[in-house]
Image (cartoon, rainbow, N blue to C red; front, side, top):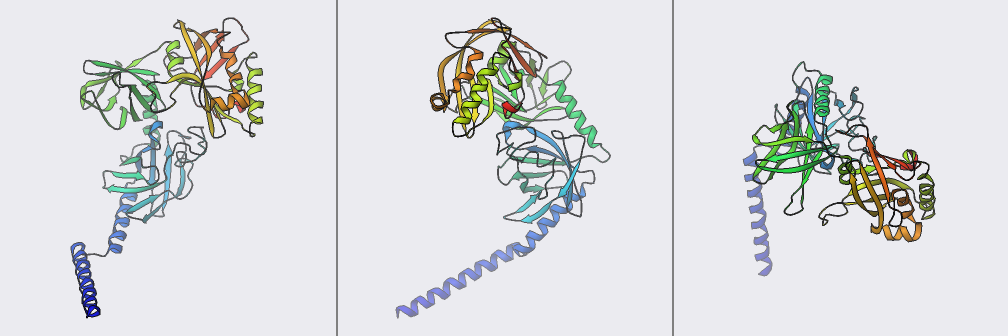
Length: 430
């Protein structure tokens, strides 16, 4: 009897499942395979249909901000790409693919110098960590498709990319040149953000604006894309009762949010003392004076004696050590293989262009290990220590947007150190 009841139960389950399946098929009216084929066809037709190509608002990791990438797709599954960051006067052509995988996937599956610039684990310009680069994607989930815009999301790193068709007859070169010119117009090291009657000091790194909430100590970040109109944020930021979306350029240096004229960004030119103590600056061996080089020669040799390691990055200045830290520390940070050390400095302001520095003996991350096994703090000596504080005169090429700051030791003219604003990888090779 029990066997008969189980048989009837199984038949009832099969019948119910079959009925549900038929209802689902009736709702869609087409098989899932047919719907997938049509979705890919629609996406391909839309991509190819923009005869002057698309403007992609491309983001890798948002800490590096957004970049204008122009892409034109053709019926032979080839895409021609030009971007503003890498050889902006050249185009590169490669293969693309559309396929189904829980939705439509757009893949730039042929290597393209202009496009894979963002996903290359060893970025050609040294941006990002070795082995990671800018953490950009070359495979994207297609979230939305229309003739006016396409919305993508990186399959691996999840940043959103918006695509819009470029107007017929518009020159690719002119489009990128106008954005580049506007970036030069708005290129300052720091800004003031005005939110109604409140004001916040804003720093810039790559295409990331950031400021600190004075009440909580939290850092508010605004990654942006540079356009011919100004700075367009990756996504709106709501803070202090205001929503920030963009800053449109104006020659009077009052750059307003187009959606809220009480939100404004104005340029601020910090003193050299502020610049060196609030932002990171990179060290290259070739930029060290005759006093400093012997100490850094010792650092290089010591690194090689610690598991055969090599110094891959050296930066001095404002360094944020962890997410719990309220504010950045001032110190010398060294990358050695997969490990990082920080040796922190104390400092005193002498004037707007003079600073006294000394290594205070404090260390973070793996600093203690490398101090004991490799004497890494030897690299701090040219900058000063608690028994021999050093006062430096600061100079630069451009107060508005310096590319370097030179430290000249007032007690020893052979101790001249030129620190670079842009990222430097492998300091002993540069």
